Length: 346
Ligand code: DAH
Image 1 (spheres, rainbow, N blue to C red):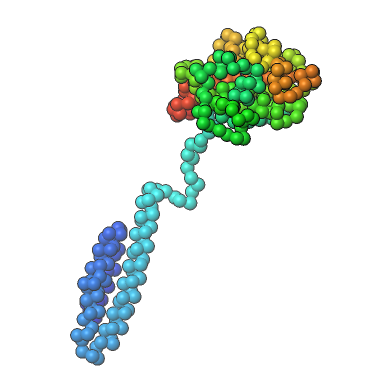
Image 2 (cartoon, rainbow, N blue to C red):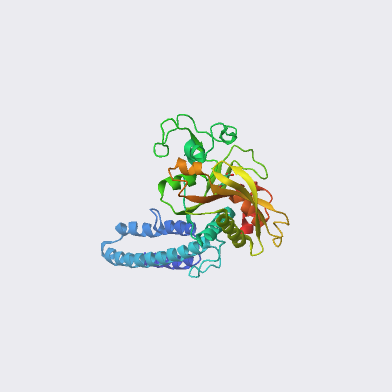
């Protein structure tokens, strides 16, 4: 019996050296230590031995058992090490810092929005925000846009169902809700919430019932500017937009004002940028925004005295600015999430 036990131990020592997978390990362990295993059988055989031999063999069994447990434990640890290496991949040193994985970045429209905000921030403008779901009052009425104005047509504006109510947005019970068609709504909200003088810039998402094509998108972004103080003139408006175009496009950039009409500014202008040195922009004047001096009717709608307060406002499309800056010729690229496009702006 003693010899048999020694052979089992020797066999285990030899075999375990060559075992490198958990399956092999388990099979081999069962062959020795399982219910019908060779080592287990030795233990069972003790009862059949003459009485005086039993303590000696019993002691020997215990010694062998300890040995076996030790080498099984060592083998298992070795196999776990192999498994860890396999799960990490070959040749990996887990103590080294992680290899560089490409890090994400802001979407190009966010980058441009941040740049525009920072240009205005430098001259004292702070960011103001407003809700995307608006009432007709903030989107149209307060902005001197009468009920029969084409912009209010359901062809152009998304109206929410009559049943929609949001107590903290509306000022009247019977108001209808829209998805804001421009960020000029924030002018009204800010004028009502704050005290002049005011100097805000307001970026945000807008919605119009446009069919998508290279230059239209039902969901787009605008940036609004508003300045209210005493004795503000068109000269101040021209100066700020000249500063903006140069900060954005470089010192050689120029601006041009063309007379236009907006219900909430008087006089009103459309602004073109020109920057011959920017190849992508081309050598033509490009229309970039609307602007003007705050119309007295807007001051009246928010209960400011138009004889006391003056101001200017402007609004531009964010996609349009990004298209000019980077020579993008189709607005749809911004919303398709195609990495081949987005990765150009890392
Ligand atoms: N709200 C105008 C639009 O969506 C843009 C605009 C024009 C904003 C004149 C203004 C402004 O603040 O004064 O086309």
